[in-house]
Amino acid sequence: MQRAAPQDFDRVLSSMCTEPHPAAREAAERFLATNPGDPGTYQTVARLEERAVELLGEITALDDPAGYITSGGTEANIQAVRIARNYVDADEPNVVVPESAHFSFTKAAEMLDVELREVPTTDYRADVAAMADVVDANTVGIVAVAGTTEYGHVDPIPALADLAEDAGALLHVDAAFGGFFLPFTDIEWNFAHAGVDTMTIDPHKAGQAAVPAGGFLARSTDYLDELTIDTPYLESESQFTLTGTRSGAGVASAVAAMETLWPDGYRDQYQASMDNAHWLADRFEERGYDVVGPELPLLAADVSLELVEQLRDRGWRVTKTGSGEMRVVCMPHVTRSMLRTFVADLDWF
Ligand code: 0PR
Image 1 (tube, protein in one colour):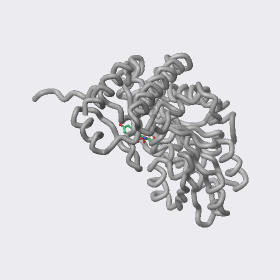
Image 2 (image 1 turned 180 degrees about the vertical axis):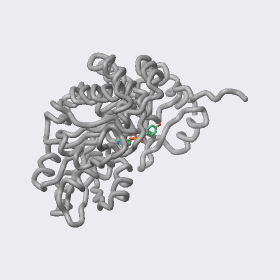
Image 3 (image 1 turned 90 degrees about the vertical axis):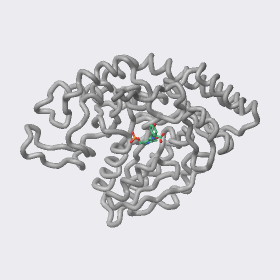
Image 4 (image 1 turned 60 degrees about the vertical axis):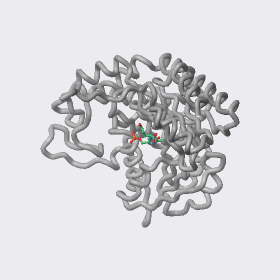
């Protein structure tokens, strides 16, 4: 039987995953048989995970960061909702999110028996006044998105932090996508800019680590205590992660990627990806399409469904937003020459 090969990335415009940095790939391979879920036995990878959290703290301007490397943004968002539910007293807890929030919050709400209050956005961003209208005494958490999945927009995080504080609720920032781009912008999004309590920031997206390596950060270990359960037969006594056995490859690759790329490599990548996104936006606009973005390296254009299908038939991996625009994510594997080929195909139809 022929050996299966993964897809190559040369027509992938749909994915927030990307080619891992060579150092991340090498580290992942070395740590394949390690389990940071058992730090007593796998001590080296456990120390690497502490280093990963320290580096994520630098990237997000958090002194003494608490947190861990998750299986992805979904797990980190679930943990954030779980902390808010357990930390804040409420009879019937609810979490208020902009409708642009990732569907992982729907999973979290269902599993944790928390009501999810989804509030329409204005100009692709959280509408603070509209969110304030649905906040009540049972609100335990408010979510802000720093780089939305569909449009790459960033919510007004300081204003949402104030809203959370007034409500006695926690503020969670979902920077799963944006976290490795935002340090190079003047947007206010991090722990120093506002009263952010918890954050999702994924090395396996723009951090250029191998999958799986999500990131969860908390301002204080008190928040992690809300998640802690006893682990009587392990050398360690308790665990705050959602999963048990975890990927040491993900942890090691996240550290390798961040040590190699933070900050200069990520800055260069941000600039290259933004340049590409602007270049593509200009090409769409020249052709008469309406474009949303790019605020981060992600844009949406009102290309017809028929054209999207034709591009897919030519091998392009592109996705549609909920409102029907074509969405292009300019991840590190997306180069200018790849985009030129894409535009040539766009013109061919
Ligand atoms: N938060 C935000 C803002 C996200 O965009 C995503 C994923 C998540 C959380 C969840 O992260 P995990 O998928 O790591 O659990 N958004 C990506 C997207 O919809 C997921 C993805 C990634 C989809 C790679 C396709 C793909 O090839 O684009």
